[in-house]
Length: 235
Image 1 (tube, rainbow, N blue to C red):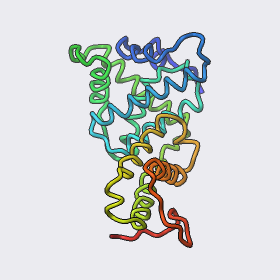
Image 2 (image 1 turned 180 degrees about the vertical axis):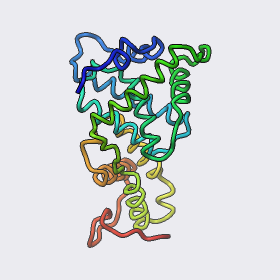
Image 3 (image 1 turned 60 degrees about the vertical axis):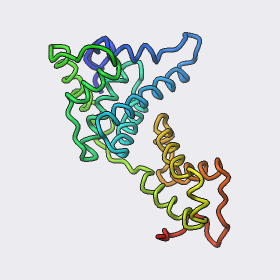
Image 4 (image 1 turned 90 degrees about the horizontal axis):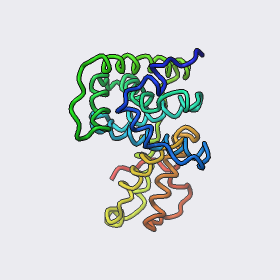
């Protein structure tokens, strides 16, 4: 792999984008691993928030986070500007999941994210240079991942398991506890770190629902098969 160009490193990024990198930096006494984990957490939060503002569905946003984690699983965080990589991951995820997002919209929403009260971004040389960098970074991500950019997510499994668990308890007892909302929130949170690439989609879905059930003390009846092996029963 060729050395990173200045357009994809921190040196070539605009100042407003670098402000996010500076806010992710920690004290020099903190170990590199802990500092990198905090950076990845903040950048994935950035991906999720701009994804909402761009009207992206949950699966494309999840794909963008997985692309980001897979990329930095292979390269050194210090060599690339993480927020630029995140913007390219959002752009690429839109293509992969067939919800195309324009680079102009990604750049404008990202600029607004870091400059909530500032002036709109002008279509000057800095804008077009950043647009080129996003496209270049997309190609770099594809090359690093060997064009393997289609992933299986836990979302469909979590929905299946929730329907199975719901069929085992009283309808009113289920409605009194926010197990569904908590399960989806936990699933979203797992994309902040590398958990989403270290475990299978099915195992993550089971773990999120199990944690939600235990958090609210919801006990499922014991049967011949565990609840995650039961077929879905429509109510």
